[in-house]
Structures are given as C-alpha cells and as structure tokens.
Length: 105
Image (cartoon, rainbow, N blue to C red):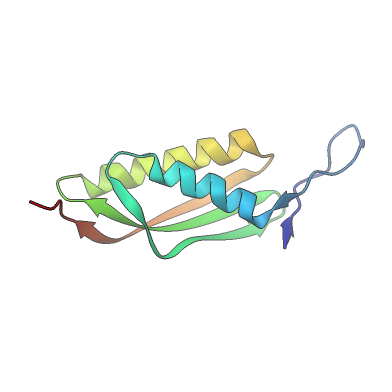
C-alpha cells in the first residue's frame, strides 16, 4: 500500500512513498539512538491522515540508560528524519519501552 503525500504546489505531478520506505526511515531513526537495543514486538506502526503521519514504536532499552531520555531522543530523531526525507509532517510519536536488556557478563 503506497502512502500518498500532498500534491506538489507547481502541479507537476505526485510523489508517493511505499510503506516500506517510511517504515525503514523510522526504524533507522530509532535504532541509531544510543540506549536503544532494538525494535521488538510490533516494531513500528504508522497511521497516515492527509499529509500527517502518526508513529508508534516498540523498543528495548539498554540497562543503565534513562528510559525517558532515550524515548525523548527517539521521538526527536524520528520527527527530524521523516520530515527531512519525505513531505510528511509528523504528528504524534509514541515510544513504547517493552523491556530492558542487560549486557552479558
């Protein structure tokens, strides 16, 4: 299913993004934050309303990281990455921390 953003202002045509493109941008933006061990469970869910995209991510956090700090940095990085790479505006970014991962001794 393709996601269709708003029409270009000069009416030269449309730009559409494949669902996997947007999901890849969100996944990469999430995993590049220090303290994020990885996506888990449902991974990434999106909902598109007009040219606004709402995001929900499910992550594990490394032991010793501040969950609230990691979640905030994930939100900011997703917003910046999606808005830079696409013509979408990001509405809500919900970060669900499902677990804490301990390093092997």
